[in-house]
Length: 378
Ligand SMILES: Nc1ncnc2c1ncn2[C@@H]1O[C@H](COP(=O)(O)OP(=O)(O)O)[C@@H](O)[C@H]1O
Ligand SMILES: [Mg+2]
Image (cartoon, rainbow, N blue to C red; front, side, top):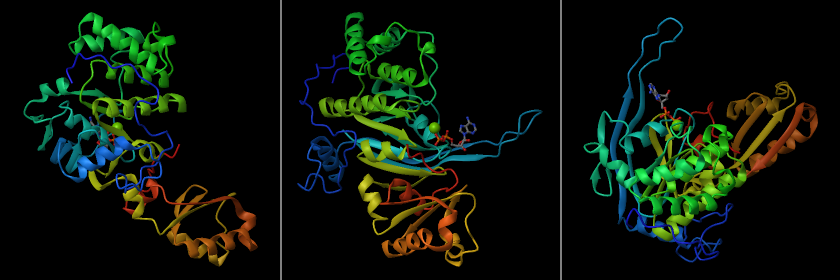
């Protein structure tokens, strides 16, 4: 795809894509996909299964931030190994996710992959280019939306998109055409003449995302693109991503700490914890690891009634977060627990409870992820 090619007009129904709530089964491509509309995902999964067409290969990527000595008013920070021997392969046309809590090393990892930060060791190869040795090539082959982007704040939405296109080598006419298409696509046309700094956080984020799409690149790297967005904007981002993959085979690396986003839009996900990849599979493949379990959440009115022996006995297995206890249990155990807390002495202390099938958050916890900084579920 030449970088200046305009985005083709969108014909409703022309691109097979999943709805926002779509689940992609592990067996997709084998005719076992109940969603039926994940043809594109099927292709990405097949490509990956056959091991061909790797767009991005990372090996042994390691980065340690040095300790900083404290000064007056500024506390000392210890040395942090932000990425620790990370290896990844991303196939063409995949929507690949990095999932992990705050501080897991996601942004550090993508900054190294996009040539913005030099790793201490390891390699990054994107579309045949060695990005560690030639970081300047990254901007020609990928579009990057940083986690914190204020660079465009003084521009209007329209100019931010157009300027990005020009910087990426489009001529004025092409840049304006792509700008108009992308602002329409994302529902931003009404805000086109507003400066980014006067928009809400979510609108500004959407405008930055729009700019990142102009002057199309074969690899999109998005660091928490949907932070602060309302559900409508979030879905607009997800379908824009899916559409580019469907129509141009764009590969997407999407950083998220949002479990719903991960389960909804990603083909595969690498779970990052303290700088290390602790698991990498399809969302459903990961969930199968905890398939035999049920998640029970108990919310106590004030404190847990530890005078009830059955409740006291559960404490060791619960992840406590304020008044909330989260337990991962076999289905029969879960039934017993619910019977215990909804009858007898414990009930008076109970505010709410839920039973749920496992989510990626349970996978994360089961893999030994840092419990206290859990993932986001909204
Ligand atoms: N510029 C920096 N200097 C020192 N430490 C940093 C810097 N940036 C990030 N860190 C630390 O590195 C770890 C990973 O951070 P980051 O990559 O931002 O994680 P994430 O994006 O997953 O939230 C954290 O412990 C963070 O405090
Ligand atoms: Mg980050």
